[in-house]
Amino acid sequence: MLEVIRPNGRLIRAVRYINFLGESIEDVVLDTAGGPVQSWASLSPSPERGFLDLGPLTVLPGLVDCHVHLALPPPRLGDDAAQVLAGRLAGCLDYGLIAVRDGGDRLGSTLDLKKHQELPRLVACGPALHPPGSYGTFLGPAFGPEHIIDQIAELAGKGADQIKILVTGPVNLDSLEAIDTPHFSARALSRLVGEAHRRQLKVMAHANGVAGVRMALTCGIDSLEHGYGMDEDTLAQLAESGVTWVPTLAPMAALVTQGPANLREAAAAALAGQMRDISRAHSLGIKIAVGTDAGAPGVVHGLSYLWELQLLGQGGLQPAALIRAATFEGARLLDLPGRNSPVDLPLAFIAVAGNPLEDLEALKHVHAVIA
Image (cartoon, rainbow, N blue to C red):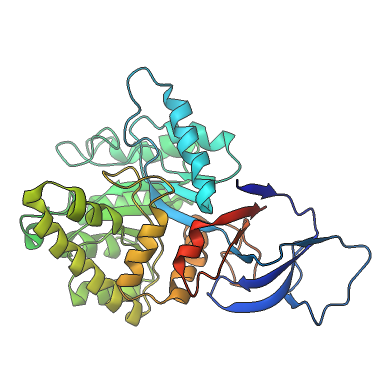
């Protein structure tokens, strides 16, 4: 059973520490009061400091899922919806997730939920923004151009941490070249992003296809969600922009294995294209963060996180890069402790059996969260 440990300033000894950059340091002592990582052999024990000895466990910063939908699938009729969402969030901790970002729920329930949960930390957007007649009514009500910008002020007043904008529709599996055109004009999208930034709110943008992604990047978004169907010029623009990419592979992989038979071949082609782009993105220095899109068909909250990491690995990210994507890039995107420097303390540590740099399956065995 997972144990949540309050270190209370104690020193933590572990067989190894894997830092935000995926660098492994053997036989270490971590100072939870903010001191540097030290080797056990070089440490001069202080009688004033207590020790927490984790024996053979590996310690690393807690994991971050940058794209979930806690309100999906919708709670069953008669269930207490608030309780269902709270249970989904709390259950993420069992998988080492110390923070998640919800990418939109129609009723804004996550804006209330985040007030009542310490860990995992919930970064919530509330309802996603999109215009009438466009994709996304299950994530938020549509608003016309004369009212949609007012929704940013309303969401800010309700405590939204970031703003979710649906720039395009979903991946078109009939033809990746025929992905929906953008829902907004460049002028309208720029106004929305500008208003969010004026209120110190980051913008996570759902966008697929060359036209939608390029418009979103030009308008100054902070994170690109999905991003299927990019070409080389778009990847180059993404690299130059400094925007973080959250590729969300698991929903497409679920379609390949669990979706309707007539969609599986197209889904496999889309997934293969996304993996190729991940390899190119890594070589270009594009910041990649991990997001499962949990709540999508076949993608389970918490449980599917390791699957997403494995898929990113198949796309070319080496173990150290996977750890960075799962920890440091997530912390930066969600404005968590540790975002300013890889040597900073994270929001929380996790302790696992085994070495995830050698075998990602080690992340299945989270023994403790230290916060």
